Length: 186
Image (cartoon, rainbow, N blue to C red; front, side, top):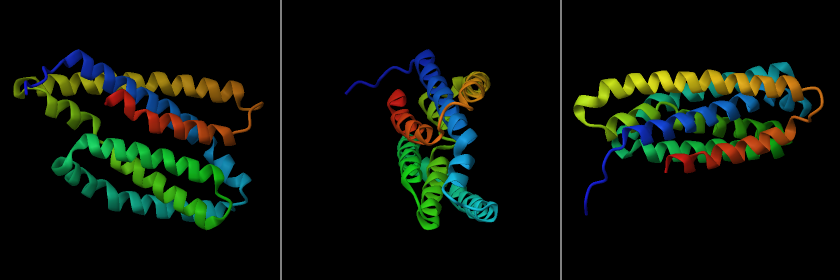
């Protein structure tokens, strides 16, 4: 079977688009999920406790997930992370108890941890040895530009729709968009 030719522009474009879309949907979700959780009846103390546990879980998952992704494939971890992240938002949308909300935040943290840091290794591993530094620099520039552009777009959307839109459907919409974001990369 012939090897596929590495197309630098195509890979950079796909990763930049995926990163930008993930930033957009994460920002949209991130700007309203506290309101959603408060509307579900959680107290500030309960929120802080859940976020503390979530942060500790992230620390436990991040480092091993990088090493495991090196061994089993970054693409697998990226796709698994996006699916888990999206599923967690569906669970959060329908959660009504502290336990189910805690589980959704644990899945959310796990999905984020599994997919974070996978873009650069995907690009670098598919490039030739001599092109890696140049591609990494281009990827860093492009993803930062996409991050700030999409954050600005999301902030504008939240600002303009914030007073007239119920945030609960945004959680559901974001989870679908995050889960299908993997299609851009495949």
